[in-house]
Length: 382
Image (spheres, rainbow, N blue to C red):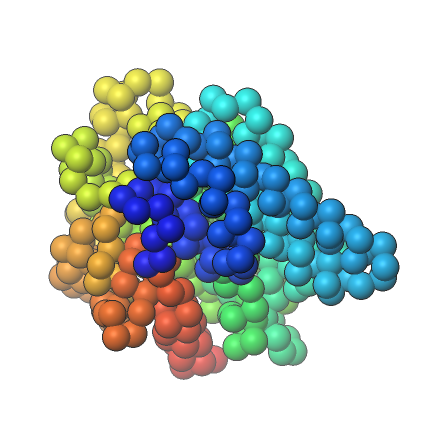
């Protein structure tokens, strides 16, 4: 993994994720130069400086996009808007939930992404998914080809958002004829920041709402639906597939088998963490006011006792050097899926790349492997 901030895993992870979303290393390196010294003081202290440096870079790129748009060069403008989106997102993601400018930058990121889709005529539709007496948003990327397309629901983890999925995945499903609904499910993105919807352990509830929405679309093959999730989505997706039987396959991009147990390890300072201000962040995500309340609730966030209900084709991928999620969790998910009719288990090595958490070091090998596996399974169902 590229490590511009020696000894600061959380900041390095953010940089690598941004590169996976299409960030330019020259731009990133200039923004990082202003914060290299303070990064040596730990993952929490310098996040506001990171916000300022990366936000300034994103603003500059946004204005260059405006110049391209004014000149009638929509495709060039969209490229700049998409990189600006990634930089705004990276800066916002690093902040405490109590940092006042955070929400304004999040809204700026949303607007910039819409600008990219608009001027670039991108294959990306903004949708709203009814959920009880409210809703949560998604991005729908349509698979190429005539007629209803097989479709994946792609859910986030602890701290990613639907725009991150889009920028990291783009058209790699679509060119294979597969549509994707990328969701800000409860606990992430707009659902958390703008609607106040916290995460829930029984992910089949919001996953069912996503399927209900897809069943209203005539361009979706309702008999070929699947779910994929990365990071904490490696818990959410298989949990949903165990109980929402309209899903015909499932992918865990990072086998987050026992997130409840993982929190005990993190309290003991075992392994690395995904974001600064970690404990405050997770209490925000789960809507809990105290650590005691949080630790009591998240005992439910485990696949222990559920994997025997996985009865559809299931792919587990995991990085051989994942510093956040223990490799043993991948083996637990594999070994407990005793009723799965088609289980594929893949640990990525240094030779292939994609060895870090959710392949943040090199996303292409893992992304391609996953999408090809899905393509093969949907083809067999046609």
